[in-house]
Image (cartoon, rainbow over all chains, first blue to last red; front, side, top):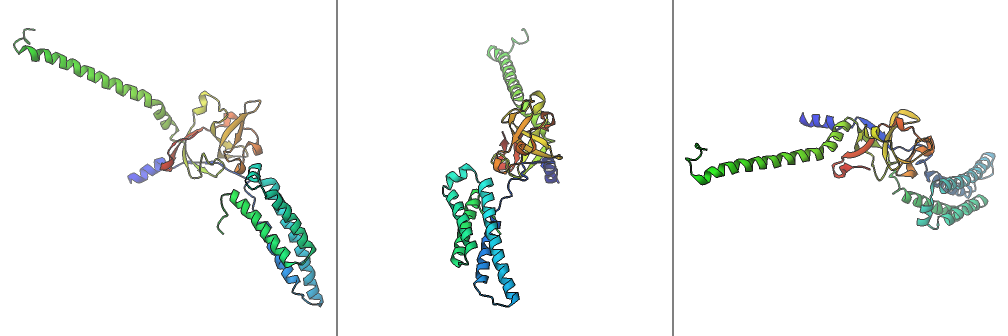
Length: 144
Length: 157
């Protein structure tokens, strides 16, 4: 009873928002990571040499198109985080960030041009490195 | 005098001294209490005035000054005497959604004296960079104390 009375007096009646809407706090390298994984999966399917009937050829063409598309998604997502989210103090702390982004751009291009599984794996690794830096600046990757 | 003289000389003198000593001691205590009262009155008065404006912090744009979940006292009359100035904390209605209150820091005044607000964690803050400067007349009050959680009890600035 007494505790309830005390709690009733103490409990806040208002909320003051220390808030953050767009355009901040919505950055997430997940899109880039999914893109890189998709590229790797498409390379895998393409290399399975699906066959010659029209359906299989259609499937093959789709894989190539999706590979192209998702390599572009990787580049776009990484560029947005690099250009809009990262601040000079982040670059100070991670001096190789610019070079890393540059290598991701090149690697994504290589994945468009080839069906090289190693190239796709390298792209994934670079994007993961980029995502790791992002989450380090955020104080840790959120638990899935 | 004749009534007192029958008793022994020394104690009779002592009674008068004792009374005086007691009076002095009483005076001293009284002055002490009054001084303490004067010293404590302003913070107590502020506590009483602002107790009705108990506010919980939501969101992380004021880190590390304010953490989400902090309970604050907001003095609604702090800015009656003087206008908010740079480095002051303010509670204000969200210009884009007046029913909701924001807590931000004043970082500057524009030419008309309106408030340029910023979060202490500007990377994750929606503030005057988005909604422009804020009318000082609209300010709800000044967050000045945190009373929860207990280990972070104290003044906020």
